[in-house]
Image (cartoon, rainbow, N blue to C red; front, top):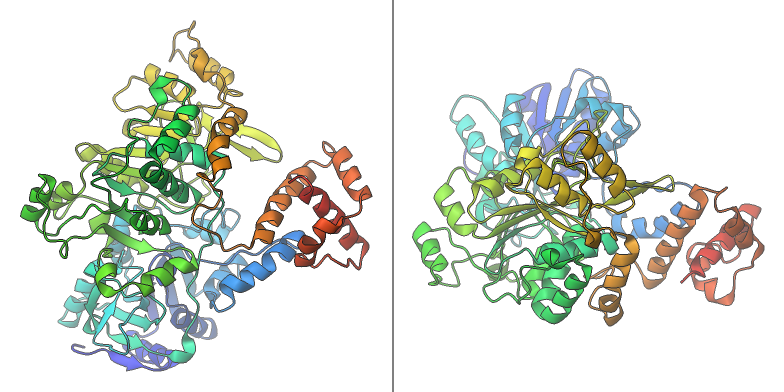
Length: 640
């Protein structure tokens, strides 16, 4: 097939046409996250469910599912929110069946990145998981025999001669040349695009002729709401770590950040540094245990930053609006070298970010769609083979990625600098490696670049506080020979080039003080630090109370907010969310908190609780259980 694609106005017709070309064995490659064409995938999956002769293998990553709240208060709280966010979203049928362990025998689903924490107990997903770096995904799809790729695409108006891979050129852009080559002979890969008219038309390598696809689906009845990820609150640990991190980012540098509350926190901290440098410097200095932890960079951004990130998150858009994301890079090496020397090229040729995929809150998609094409072109979307590594155009990428800071999350870190990000030591996968290893390795390969991995110093499980800084762990994502900078809420440990003894000392300085003695004892027992070593006095007060005190002035002034870029929750819902978290903590250990629970059940809700209880459909409790819910919730609300 060559020239224009076949246009289908019904999804089922596209499935019929595809099966007539492929026969009864399909290895389907789908993009990570947002870019899946859900109606087409569901129609194809239904055919496989109905016809055992049709063998369907799905290769993908990050299958997005709306959360399923637990019965009771969680359902009462989350129900209206989920309705607002996902009422028009078409869930993926294979995901629901996999969650129930009910995939038919003729269907397999393999993912190289799982929705974080969602499938720890799902043996089907755990056994089918593919451990791979993001940059190897296209290769691995080919090795597994992919013969169909499919995703949603954007169009401009009613024109259908060109399409944009938009949110997901991450893997498809690398496979498209093979689609075209297969038409001329050899291995055949069929490309299916489903037009989504709420998807922003993105430029760069994502922009391609419609003829890159064999089939385009333009079914107006199959429109569905784009999956959105609501903003999460930025807590004290995130805010403190972000302030440490923002002090490590040089003006004129390159930035990579990931999704979630830390990404929002880092973006907000960089904006604070740019707009209120004195407040930033003062707050960060208040967090520092001693002078060695004071921010290296505190001045506003004159040259600005360039974004080079597999994920184009909402935080980058906020940085752009604030005048931080403004350093332009160019596709021509000579022009880029001249820009690095202080002679920037024409403004209409430069861009401020290269991203591999995007996913975010609803207003992020709306903002991109509302931009004029010239402005949207500042954020070209590209394959991860371009964004996540240096190979294939290395001279230009090195010239563009000056002063790079690659910022990612970890779950745990060892005292000798290894980081755990994707998996538990018993083998269960939490999420996946994704691009983390690529960015860490890239930081060691690029002159002036650094990898910054943020690990919360502690976690709470079943009411018990545990350290995330550990002596040893049975699995690591980033080996200790690639250790660089590790940050907790208590500071930054610069580990590059240090001996094991000095790495241990630096990691102890950013561990929670409740666990420092035990960690130090383990290091001494192993002979990795001298028997008479003492943690310096300045670092023995690494406790949450110190962090809260340091952040308090900036919070009071409004410089630090739990939702720095707004929230999808109403004010009443934010108040309820805080109360529900407290109530959950109290009920997790009922014997320990028996006095509080008994007192809460004895008190009637007051007038100031009426709006919140009405929101939870507890304003007029009908059952004994509802009366108990109302009283417990009112007591939790009274803590404000």
